[in-house]
Length: 174
Image (cartoon, rainbow, N blue to C red; front, side, top):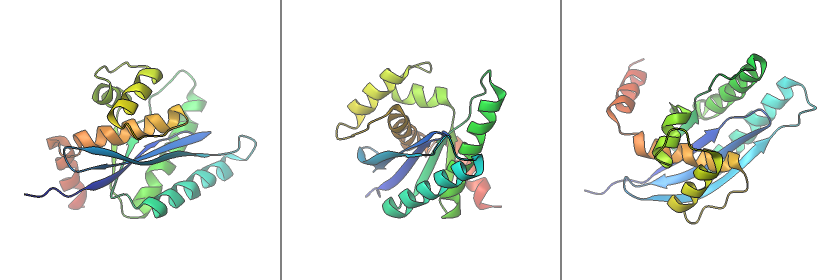
């Protein structure tokens, strides 16, 4: 039985920089396709910054045509205003693929870290090192890109879990 290859985009939302990483998975092997980030200008109004992120992600989606998307869930931090802005960037990160008909999965930061590193409280350097080991051809220039690739790797590993399949069935029945 031949397994089809799935192209996955992982998106690490951020208002300043939204990282993206694309991998292909055939069920057993992962391969690096591309990664980068979309940046917004901190001097711009919030609506302009969100629009910049949306247009940038639309361009990436058009260029690489992923079949599935995954986004990191927002964690709540001490600064409510920063959390709200991150939530808005996360909304854009979910909207862009959804607007093209791509189903978007969500994963907690701890699950992403546990999947990639083996520990739910790994730091940025550990994530970057493991992403490089899992995807030796990966070329990333920032933690945002490495995190986005980690999100894509997490999705590749969990996309067929009973929980993910149940979510797909529920979404399809709506």
